[in-house]
Image 1 (tube, rainbow, N blue to C red):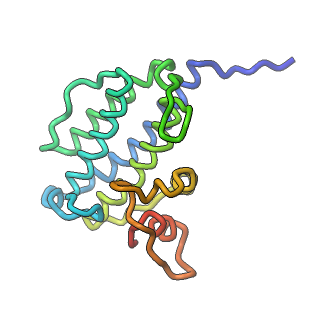
Image 2: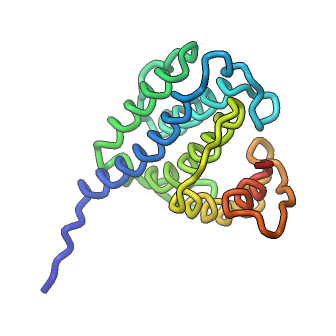
Length: 192
Protein backbone atom coordinates (compact mmCIF):
# COMPACT_ATOMS: atom_id res chain seq x y z
CA UNK A 1 0.00 0.00 0.00
CA UNK A 2 1.32 3.44 -0.95
CA UNK A 3 0.85 6.29 1.47
CA UNK A 4 0.94 9.94 0.60
CA UNK A 5 3.90 11.87 1.92
CA UNK A 6 1.97 15.14 1.53
CA UNK A 7 1.54 16.74 4.94
CA UNK A 8 0.37 20.09 6.25
CA UNK A 9 4.05 21.08 6.41
CA UNK A 10 4.44 20.25 2.71
CA UNK A 11 1.34 22.33 1.99
CA UNK A 12 2.83 25.36 3.76
CA UNK A 13 6.20 24.85 2.08
CA UNK A 14 4.58 24.55 -1.37
CA UNK A 15 2.51 27.67 -0.78
CA UNK A 16 5.53 29.59 0.46
CA UNK A 17 7.57 28.52 -2.56
CA UNK A 18 4.79 29.44 -5.01
CA UNK A 19 4.33 32.83 -3.34
CA UNK A 20 8.08 33.45 -3.34
CA UNK A 21 8.39 32.62 -7.03
CA UNK A 22 5.75 35.23 -7.95
CA UNK A 23 7.11 37.73 -5.41
CA UNK A 24 10.62 37.29 -6.82
CA UNK A 25 9.33 37.91 -10.35
CA UNK A 26 7.70 41.11 -9.14
CA UNK A 27 10.92 42.05 -7.28
CA UNK A 28 13.03 41.59 -10.42
CA UNK A 29 10.93 44.11 -12.34
CA UNK A 30 10.77 46.53 -9.41
CA UNK A 31 14.57 46.38 -9.10
CA UNK A 32 14.92 47.19 -12.82
CA UNK A 33 12.93 50.44 -12.67
CA UNK A 34 15.19 53.48 -13.12
CA UNK A 35 14.98 55.95 -10.22
CA UNK A 36 13.45 58.64 -12.43
CA UNK A 37 10.65 56.32 -13.64
CA UNK A 38 8.88 55.82 -10.31
CA UNK A 39 6.66 58.83 -10.96
CA UNK A 40 5.83 57.69 -14.53
CA UNK A 41 2.21 56.92 -15.33
CA UNK A 42 1.28 53.23 -15.32
CA UNK A 43 -1.45 51.57 -17.40
CA UNK A 44 -3.62 51.77 -14.25
CA UNK A 45 -5.52 55.05 -14.53
CA UNK A 46 -4.23 57.66 -12.10
CA UNK A 47 -1.42 55.48 -10.74
CA UNK A 48 2.31 55.92 -11.10
CA UNK A 49 4.73 52.98 -11.03
CA UNK A 50 5.27 53.68 -7.31
CA UNK A 51 1.49 53.68 -6.73
CA UNK A 52 1.22 50.22 -8.30
CA UNK A 53 3.85 48.81 -5.91
CA UNK A 54 2.03 50.48 -3.00
CA UNK A 55 -1.25 48.90 -4.15
CA UNK A 56 0.23 45.40 -4.30
CA UNK A 57 1.76 45.79 -0.83
CA UNK A 58 -1.31 47.42 0.71
CA UNK A 59 -3.86 44.94 -0.64
CA UNK A 60 -1.82 41.97 0.59
CA UNK A 61 -1.40 43.64 3.97
CA UNK A 62 -5.16 44.27 4.20
CA UNK A 63 -5.86 40.63 3.30
CA UNK A 64 -3.55 39.27 5.99
CA UNK A 65 -4.71 41.85 8.55
CA UNK A 66 -8.30 40.81 7.88
CA UNK A 67 -7.32 37.31 8.99
CA UNK A 68 -5.52 38.49 12.13
CA UNK A 69 -2.02 38.07 10.70
CA UNK A 70 0.25 41.00 11.57
CA UNK A 71 2.89 41.80 8.96
CA UNK A 72 4.37 44.63 11.03
CA UNK A 73 4.64 48.26 10.02
CA UNK A 74 4.04 49.16 6.39
CA UNK A 75 7.39 49.51 4.61
CA UNK A 76 8.36 53.00 3.46
CA UNK A 77 7.58 53.43 -0.25
CA UNK A 78 10.28 56.08 -0.70
CA UNK A 79 12.41 53.11 -1.76
CA UNK A 80 10.03 50.75 -3.60
CA UNK A 81 12.70 48.08 -4.10
CA UNK A 82 13.40 47.74 -0.37
CA UNK A 83 9.71 48.17 0.49
CA UNK A 84 8.71 45.25 -1.74
CA UNK A 85 11.53 43.03 -0.49
CA UNK A 86 10.64 43.76 3.14
CA UNK A 87 6.97 43.05 2.49
CA UNK A 88 7.60 39.83 0.55
CA UNK A 89 9.95 38.57 3.29
CA UNK A 90 7.27 39.19 5.92
CA UNK A 91 4.61 37.35 3.90
CA UNK A 92 7.03 34.46 3.30
CA UNK A 93 7.71 34.30 7.03
CA UNK A 94 3.98 34.18 7.80
CA UNK A 95 3.56 31.34 5.29
CA UNK A 96 6.13 29.16 7.08
CA UNK A 97 3.24 28.22 9.40
CA UNK A 98 1.18 25.75 7.32
CA UNK A 99 -1.89 26.57 9.40
CA UNK A 100 -1.92 30.05 7.84
CA UNK A 101 -2.37 28.88 4.24
CA UNK A 102 -4.80 26.13 5.25
CA UNK A 103 -7.06 28.47 7.24
CA UNK A 104 -10.53 28.43 5.67
CA UNK A 105 -13.02 31.28 5.36
CA UNK A 106 -15.99 32.32 3.25
CA UNK A 107 -14.61 34.44 0.43
CA UNK A 108 -16.22 36.49 -2.33
CA UNK A 109 -16.55 33.35 -4.48
CA UNK A 110 -17.51 30.96 -1.65
CA UNK A 111 -15.57 28.76 0.79
CA UNK A 112 -11.82 29.00 0.31
CA UNK A 113 -8.52 29.15 2.20
CA UNK A 114 -5.97 31.87 2.76
CA UNK A 115 -3.52 29.98 0.55
CA UNK A 116 -5.95 29.51 -2.31
CA UNK A 117 -7.01 33.15 -2.27
CA UNK A 118 -3.43 34.35 -1.92
CA UNK A 119 -2.39 32.48 -5.05
CA UNK A 120 -5.55 32.95 -7.12
CA UNK A 121 -6.20 36.64 -6.49
CA UNK A 122 -3.02 38.14 -5.05
CA UNK A 123 -0.82 35.95 -7.25
CA UNK A 124 -2.80 37.22 -10.24
CA UNK A 125 -2.20 40.76 -8.97
CA UNK A 126 1.56 40.26 -8.67
CA UNK A 127 1.82 39.06 -12.27
CA UNK A 128 -0.53 41.64 -13.81
CA UNK A 129 0.96 44.53 -11.87
CA UNK A 130 4.49 43.39 -12.62
CA UNK A 131 3.66 44.17 -16.24
CA UNK A 132 2.11 47.51 -15.23
CA UNK A 133 5.23 48.58 -13.32
CA UNK A 134 7.45 47.48 -16.19
CA UNK A 135 5.26 49.23 -18.74
CA UNK A 136 5.44 52.50 -16.78
CA UNK A 137 9.24 52.23 -16.84
CA UNK A 138 9.45 51.22 -20.51
CA UNK A 139 10.58 47.67 -19.70
CA UNK A 140 9.65 44.60 -21.76
CA UNK A 141 8.07 42.25 -19.21
CA UNK A 142 7.31 38.70 -20.32
CA UNK A 143 5.23 36.10 -18.51
CA UNK A 144 6.09 32.42 -18.28
CA UNK A 145 3.61 29.83 -19.58
CA UNK A 146 2.79 28.89 -15.97
CA UNK A 147 2.12 32.53 -15.10
CA UNK A 148 -0.14 32.92 -18.11
CA UNK A 149 -2.03 29.77 -17.13
CA UNK A 150 -2.45 31.14 -13.59
CA UNK A 151 -3.72 34.44 -15.01
CA UNK A 152 -6.09 32.86 -17.55
CA UNK A 153 -7.53 30.48 -14.97
CA UNK A 154 -8.00 33.26 -12.43
CA UNK A 155 -9.57 35.64 -14.98
CA UNK A 156 -12.03 32.95 -16.09
CA UNK A 157 -12.89 32.20 -12.44
CA UNK A 158 -13.56 35.86 -11.68
CA UNK A 159 -16.22 36.00 -14.38
CA UNK A 160 -17.89 39.42 -14.69
CA UNK A 161 -16.22 40.49 -11.41
CA UNK A 162 -12.99 40.83 -13.43
CA UNK A 163 -14.40 44.06 -14.83
CA UNK A 164 -15.82 45.34 -11.56
CA UNK A 165 -14.96 48.76 -10.18
CA UNK A 166 -11.25 48.99 -9.44
CA UNK A 167 -10.33 45.62 -10.96
CA UNK A 168 -9.70 45.59 -14.75
CA UNK A 169 -10.80 47.85 -17.55
CA UNK A 170 -12.97 46.22 -20.24
CA UNK A 171 -11.09 43.97 -22.64
CA UNK A 172 -9.55 45.43 -25.78
CA UNK A 173 -9.36 43.98 -29.28
CA UNK A 174 -6.14 42.55 -30.64
CA UNK A 175 -5.04 41.17 -33.99
CA UNK A 176 -6.11 37.57 -34.68
CA UNK A 177 -2.46 36.48 -34.79
CA UNK A 178 -1.53 38.15 -31.47
CA UNK A 179 0.62 36.06 -29.15
CA UNK A 180 -0.72 34.54 -25.96
CA UNK A 181 0.58 37.28 -23.65
CA UNK A 182 -0.87 40.03 -25.85
CA UNK A 183 -4.27 38.27 -25.86
CA UNK A 184 -4.12 37.82 -22.08
CA UNK A 185 -3.25 41.47 -21.50
CA UNK A 186 -6.09 42.49 -23.84
CA UNK A 187 -8.51 40.41 -21.77
CA UNK A 188 -7.32 42.43 -18.76
CA UNK A 189 -7.95 45.71 -20.56
CA UNK A 190 -4.28 46.35 -21.27
CA UNK A 191 -2.75 47.25 -24.62
CA UNK A 192 0.58 45.48 -25.11
